[in-house]
Length: 302
Image 1 (spheres, rainbow, N blue to C red):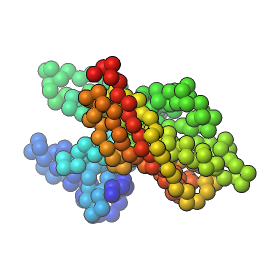
Image 2: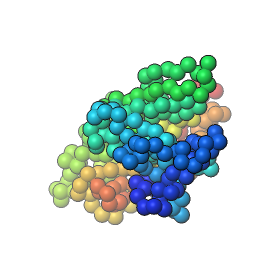
Image 3: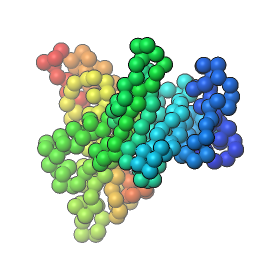
């Protein structure tokens, strides 16, 4: 289990700065202490830790002006790369920037990390001359909008939302919106007032539909991540209701809960997967949906 924290204790800060140095300075034979600067005193610091409290990923945000925030010192421990921790740091720092009134965020990036930031919705604002200087950094920028509040693949999520509205009318009637996608977690929300029964709680059928679409959406986005073509269809589903929903309904599905194999699609065969989603009443888990999904291969492209 991993969580994002603000390092505050002396021990936490020691781990925070040491990971910065290990990833960003040690490879270039820079001394301890070179990983810090004057903005550390006024910046926002975030760190992903594991169950043992060890630093997994770190990052800092500071303000260049009341409108412009900058993310620096992004680092993920090599042994934990590819698990989504960098996205978690970006998400936490962007929340801090938005809450403090920033209108946009800038990031400086070398060629080897620019693809990651583009997936997080950043665009190149100033391109560096990496031909003559391979270590030069490009400047990337994200202007905050309702669309790019989704931290990872915001364009894909906007297209998926439009698909739901056009092809699954119940999603629009229920007020189901994509709240967040991190590459490994997908969250949806619904409008309670559109799904309320005579008891003042959410219809059981609406909870089922929210759970289904949350799973469906994560699988659809994972097909895009893998460059695979197919149509996601629910084969069978069941749900366990524990408590009524009386506040904001939320659905969450996680990639770690997917069982099955996407690879059959590469051979023009259907893929069969299982996935569960959790329904929350604001912050309290109240129901769990489990679905058996079939991804129908596009055999015309075999």
